[in-house]
Image 1: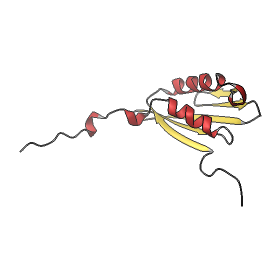
Image 2 (image 1 turned 120 degrees about the vertical axis):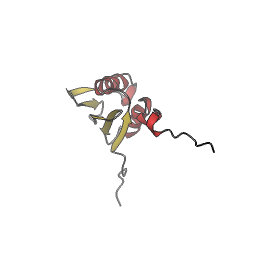
Image 3 (image 1 turned 90 degrees about the vertical axis):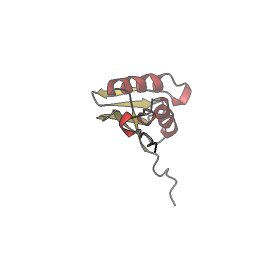
Image 4 (image 1 turned 30 degrees about the vertical axis):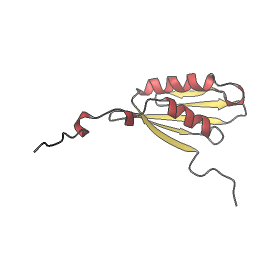
Length: 108
């Protein structure tokens, strides 16, 4: 028997933010956390960043443009709850209404 969180080390979401805004929000979110849950920028590129927590734990966040916004993928073993909180703080692409998807009722 192993004690590993299944399916929680890799998380994904979609947001209406631009990619650069997502990465800036991640840096802000993780550096302002207090105590053992803060993490600081280690590496950064145009489509990703990695942060390092106080215990040496790595958080990796990648972005990719998609229709209507940005796909965001994050990975961490011990910071999975904080990563989920960060994703929840982003405006969801699912929250936007696609006018083409709205059906008009037919009145007989």
